[in-house]
Image 1 (cartoon, helix red, strand yellow):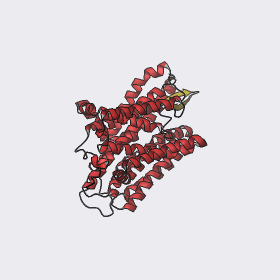
Image 2 (cartoon, one colour; image 1 turned 90 degrees about the vertical axis):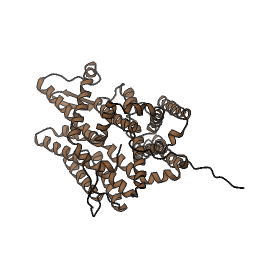
Image 3 (tube, helix red, strand yellow; image 1 turned 45 degrees about the vertical axis):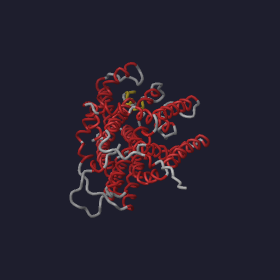
Length: 438
């Protein structure tokens, strides 16, 4: 008797999609715009006793809860990152490329615009100090600038681990993602039981790695292979569980609070996002091919990291200009969450988007310029990735100052050098052609 072995989960998957996925490109652009809008609406600037006060406008406000439900797009962002990274790595493998070369390309693509931006910010802080701006205001500006950089450190770490996790996915897909999810939930439980808040920061690894891993299932066709009913049920169960976790106090209904440190609530949000995207994929794809959405996707995807890195300096500059204008004219700035403040928000948000886009255009070449061949040395790239992450973590822990910016730039320059092939060959290709990142 012949025993026919059932095909494995990986054997049932569709081949990798050919060409660009316009729906995913459009969603990535929407996510980037959502991040800029979220951070822009959280900026609060007033003048008290003749001194500017910069604060988080959402602190203690009721409106951040519904706003966070709409604009908390980071779970989808990391799922898209997993989707794009998995496809890019598989294609590189098909061409005979090594995992080290994939990671090196990621390191160079992510850190090159970062070291440029951080260097300019450090120089700007030095100029403000020389101009006599109070040290406490400069410190607040440096701290606010550093906050969004967590994404750079975490995303770089996740992408550096992607080849190893892609290999695990090909062998034990459910066990791999299940282990990451279980680890994330265990961290939440340990944090709740012990009361030690620092424990939650372990989920900077587990939550975001799990969401990236979920993106692999979208990339290899597993999600699309499920019935519509199964995807509807998955999204509904995740939604009901999320609401239950909010009402019982397990997680805060403010999804911004669930990002620092990350919690399992973001995993549920990711499942809801993934369910909606998979069910509406055809409509999103058709819409993304229209001229306006296609132009938005092309603009943002060419400048993703530049937009992310420069939107906070733009917001800080806008806040500073408003404070100086108020001090000079005597016209009071509206208090956050008041009617006058809300009336001024559309103009504020439109200005933030416009100025960020203009800066991104000016610095496009920093992100897209040709890059020399990447190293294929596992040891060199491991050091390069670790050094790049450590450089960003320095800014997160100590804040951005002239000194920390200089140290971070130095570390990133060394990381870039390590990611570069020791003996170059002619005809280095553009890193934007090597890999597209979320």
